[in-house]
Image 1 (cartoon, rainbow, N blue to C red):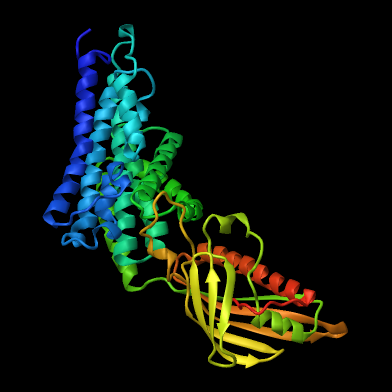
Image 2: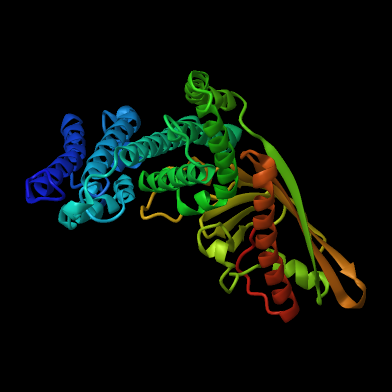
Length: 456
């Protein structure tokens, strides 16, 4: 068996050496930057698994003289390395048993090392099986190119829109998935059309791999990606269908597809000039089997909220835990402790047993992302959802009962508002129910420990 036939020893060695050279080249670029910036120190462990992230993350580069070049350099180095690794893996996968599509897993940090190891030791195809037909190789090659183009565009769009422009709107969640899937659908159906189901599968797989790449680069966490998935999938399916149709138009479709790529930065930059703005008000009430005096005492002396919240909040969404009030009357400062940080508020109305209003001076992050990294470079976690103010009112009811009402006003800088607002309203409702039920339990028990008050 020759070195070039069906997984011979020579072919195994050449593939392993070439793949390791591509992997180590990323580390050499990183070490060159560190040397150039004269920044000694021991890098964190994950750099050796995903060196491209070290070039992207501000946390790793902000103290270096080349910090401004970290983002584009990190993306270019990693994407070029991924393209080379996938090309090598596909060539090797033709000579071993199993599906050639395993080569696409070399796009994912950590998994790429396992795939390289498997392709190196995997048994070769029997000689009687022959070479993979040219048509099949062309189809796999075309699909792989479409996937690489899609994953690259996904990472570049999110990197440009989020950390650079700080915009989360129609361009990112609607326009970009549609146009990226259009490109994937067009490439996958050139030069030969494939089925609509195959086109859809290819586009969705590209977005899955793109999501893994975003998590790997720490541009996003799992929670945000899961929340955005229904909207992105809908736009991706529409775009893939249109791209497939354009592929049948020949040369005319090619111009339209290239123009769609060129319009992506224009869409993002245009929305940065007029970022999305939405607001809504939420009002929740609860009846308490206690007089207004006991309810008021519970509100201004809250105490820690016992018990764990619902599953989405345990996974990272912010929820109230406790707080404290400093002073008394108008102008007093309230410190609300949430699972993601601390909110500071100033009292604007203080009417014992009747009314307590305040404005929010600062909000904690709206969520803490699920990620293998301590820091996720996703601006949407802080500042894109804000609470303006909150108003407690206590209404006496017959039989020594009371009604406690909490009204809040919120700003949401995410679009489309019709998609994101219901999620924000649900989170506000769940947190208010948690707070109001705690107030009711304390007031009805008549055992209020002077400790804290908390805001929404």
